[in-house]
Amino acid sequence: MQGNTACAEGALAAGCRFFGGYPITPSTEVAELMASRLPRKGGVFVQMEDEIASIASVIGASWTGMRSMTATSGPGFSLMMENLGFAVMTETPCVVVNVQRGGPSTGQPTMSAQGDMMQCRFGSHGDYSIIALSPASVQEMYELTARAFNLADQFRVPVFLMADEIIGHMRERIEIPDSMPIVERKPLIPGVLPFHPDPDLVPGFPTFGKGYGVHVTGLTHDERGYPCATSPSVHEELVTRLVEKVESARKRIADYVVTCPDAKVVFVSYGAPARSVEQLIHDRPSEKIGHLRLKMVWPFPEHALDEFPESQTFLVPEQNLGQIAREIQRHTDRSVVSLPKLGGNLHSPGELGQALEGHR
Amino acid sequence: MRHQVRFSGFGGQGIILSAVILGRAAVMYDGKYAVQTQVYGPEARGGASMSAVIIDDQPILFPKVTNPDLFVIMSQEGFEKYGTRADPHAVMLLDSTLVRSRPGCKFFEVPATREAKETLGRDIVANIIMLGATVRATGIVSENAMEKAILDSVPKGTESLNIKAMKRGFDLIEKGAEP
Image (cartoon, rainbow over all chains, first blue to last red; front, top):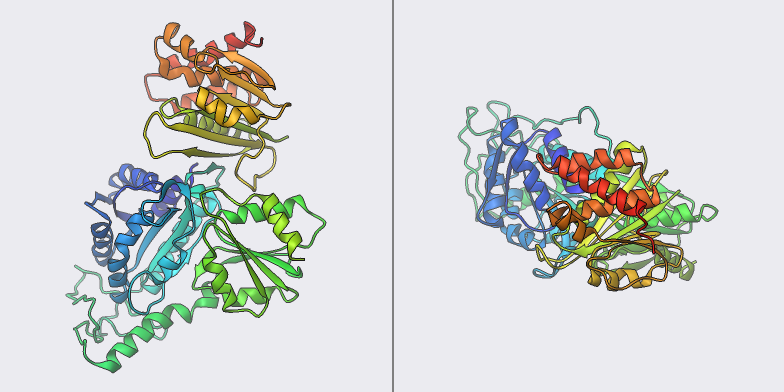
């Protein structure tokens, strides 16, 4: 099965019933499959006029209680940034798949990249936090897409599946589980104000058409949902909560794989380059080569670096100029070496082997 | 046993589909592992197209083909881009209707595009002739698996045409496509 197909299948298994999107290489297969499958499942597929409208439709559909998603790549992702901030501010659960290609601008439509890792974290204005997952196989395109819906509903945030062209277009074996665990959206308890948070900092969800008329605004709002845009304290409290509801769960939701925790040199990877690291480790069975493979990149699991107490150097292969390498640097006093790769090719295991020799 | 296979040609010939069918035959009907990848340009048709398959008894980690032991080449540009650097121990199948050059490694000349047009009446099945020839020449997957994978992958109503094309590929190897 193809990675993009697995993504759509994972979304359907997770109960996604709305897709609003605009086709773009290398993500189009996700939309194609959703267009053919959703109507037969009682869902809705809409090809919107552009990506600004696509994410707007996804936000609207989510407020009707549907699990909703879109899929895009760099240029479309840039167009979505404004409304993604709106989704953050209005606490709208949604899943955005970005099958990354070479940028900036239209760049390399058919070639792989990981250049949008910082954009998904900080691309819209203001302070906020989101969740971003990064699949390294067709199997994970399925599983992490399904998990993205659970996280979106649990935290009421946009959740990004930050795939890349290699994983999205690759075909390989996949085992489809009989069912995926589904974490339902917490309903609003009658009598509670619609933006009053529970102890987990997430308010219950008042679904449109289920007895609620809720004011949903991108303006700073009070717990009723009414605009309250000049109160410093309301704004500070709201934005702090929007950040904290995700950041306080950092350890609880972290998703990573540790290989050889007593290694001195440790690769940190996510997405397609993880496959190169795994090949290198497989090819050198007698050597101690550490590997921290991140399946969730944001919120960044800084505690995972402590899983390698002997580590002296972190080597970070990415299909960008070192976006996550700098994030790692922020959290450790060990040496962090960025191994950037642009142009669309994957780091070869041989190249990683040379980097390893150079930093022993 | 690992095989790395590279297909190349131009957009519209079914270069990517050929790799998908070969990978599908290996995984679904021969019980192996396979990973299929590709490189293509933004053009829908006419641009250079390359696809690749790794077939192995073990799970495949690094997904890209680095040193193919089997080439299936369907255009002169595809040969120049990928075929000229073929390992001397590799095996190459050439669509001799479209590829003028010949490699240093062992090769089979398969006039697939001419046969598709003249014998089967549809040049669109040239890639399936190449797949049939590839399987008969190398045994990389079983012929039964290839037939099933082709039937899974082609549009309804074209099944018998495509199976004829595959069998034509078998015959072209029997007739001594090897120089």
